[in-house]
Length: 298
Image (cartoon, rainbow, N blue to C red; front, side, top):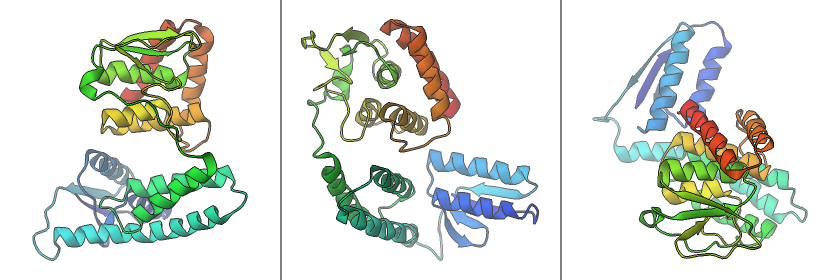
């Protein structure tokens, strides 16, 4: 996609703001005020919003679907995008090495490194040099800090998740409420839910456990259950990715993503669990909440 824009001279800060937004999207500058991004639903939506914002400020902006005919090749464009990200990976790789060499490793600094890695990876469209090396050293840091990730039980294939009974612990909160919504909304609309006392529960054939010790779907490494389910279902959906980040921060309390909606949604979840002692009613109220959040984020 080709994004062109003309920005009025006032207010003077707006030009810098537009440039910062384009950089955050990973856009490649091919000329003054001419930028490229690979065509995806997410990128197109971001550029449409930016075009709207430029127009609101009295400027002009245009968005085209383009094909390089002369002057560029697909390979040269991919190499140019990767060249934008290579210094980012190099800088973060050095920071990660320094962190790994520390005797006392502060968790807050590790979260900052992971957030930065997620930001770079999101706009690394073609696998820039340094990415794999950085992923390896970050796995080493994660192991040094928290030990090897505990493996969950083998996960059924997507086709085998239909018609199952989904079992989880009593007293559901944000991770289990959101996971139940995800299951019924995107995996099996007719899924049955069972809430059990984990100390007295015995696993039965046909049941799938979520957010339970040794369950098929539960926390893995620093991923909450909702994130694990979302990855397994292979749902390429930006709104669901945003919900996963919100649920992660509420459930794990590590402020990894720091989305602006998180505190408000955390308060609403707290209200739902405070008003409703029964798990079924919590799921009903939570389903309405997450359906509204999903609609808003889309």
